[in-house]
Amino acid sequence: MLYSQSSFSPDGDNVAYVGQRNGKDVLYLTRTRGGGTRRIDLPVDGVLSPVFTPDGTHIVFSSNKGGITDLAIVKVDGTGFRQLTNDRHGDYMPTVSPDGRTIAFASDRGGETDFDLLRFSRWKVSLYDLATGNITVLPSQPGLSINPQWAPDGKSIAYVSDRNGVPNVFLYDFTNREHYQLTNVAGGVAGITEFS
Image (tube, rainbow, N blue to C red; front, top):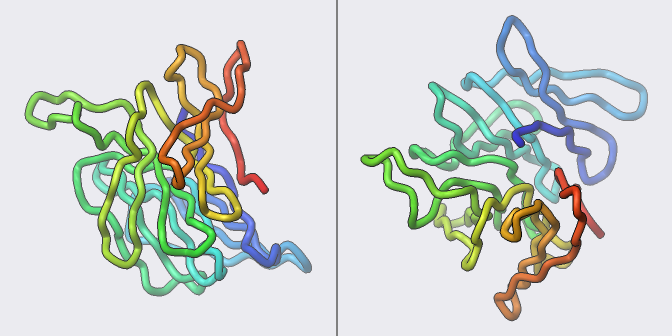
């Protein structure tokens, strides 16, 4: 269920991906034309799912430090590392909205989570506002919801959910605040990528 995929920069000139160096996750940027790889060392133990911001200046990713997974951001030149979330929730699979203002991600945030009782919500698509740091959970998400992907116009998010017993692709429409099932694959859907 957890995986880390590579990400192309908006101009297609670079690809960001995670590799290992001395037993630690490292973020790499490789030029797609002419080669050349740059390593970005980060003050975290693990790195998952790096994605570029729409303007190509930053990379957002899931960082793991001491067993806690949070959202983090760094400039493409390797400077300006900043942890965006800082709590006990797991934050995975980030993707940045086309306007660069919001990060959608999968998290165990939800009413069922109780750290004192060690009870955790199933993963739900959540939104992080980059300007305010506010986090909201999309409403009405029974089952496990992962792998959010923004529509090019930013008005909806596609994601994978097993709410009907088998993982399929659903769409959340921000205009009418409704969820729609897009696929009905008997064997299930493992993941989706950016759509246009």
